[in-house]
Amino acid sequence: MQWVALAIVCTALIVVSYYSPKIGFSLLGAIGAIVGTLYFLNLDESETSNFPIERESVQLDDVNAQESYGESWDYSGRVSNSSEKVITDVLIKITLRDCPDGSGTVNDECPIIGEQVDFVAINVPPRQARDFRDNISFKNAVQKGVLNWNFELVGVRVTD
Image (tube, rainbow, N blue to C red; front, side, top):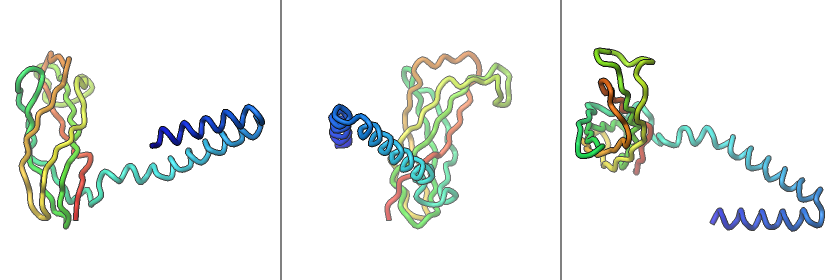
């Protein structure tokens, strides 16, 4: 639907610009200013919309990964919900680093060889916790050293 509206606006601007270039370019500038303003006004909302509940009320615990078939990995963990709403889905950012052998810490010598955000469907009632298991794939991630995994909760979806 948005593409149809965009096509109509572009066609109208072309027609108006043909007959009166000043009005056409003025309208184009006005539309650009409106779109830019709306984008920046909604920027703060989009950053917080991934957490419709307090961030501290959701915990991601005991997450670990183990090699599965092909270039995929199974990972599992626990989501705890201390809010008053039901968590229906979580978004988890998974970062895979390849650290040199013997390196005990993650530093600049550990390049990121895989990174993605995974959607996990889970039903966690208020003041409860649920375990989850999912599978991810890091195609073309070649391990040369020791793998280091990082799991970060980046969003939740809730219902009342």
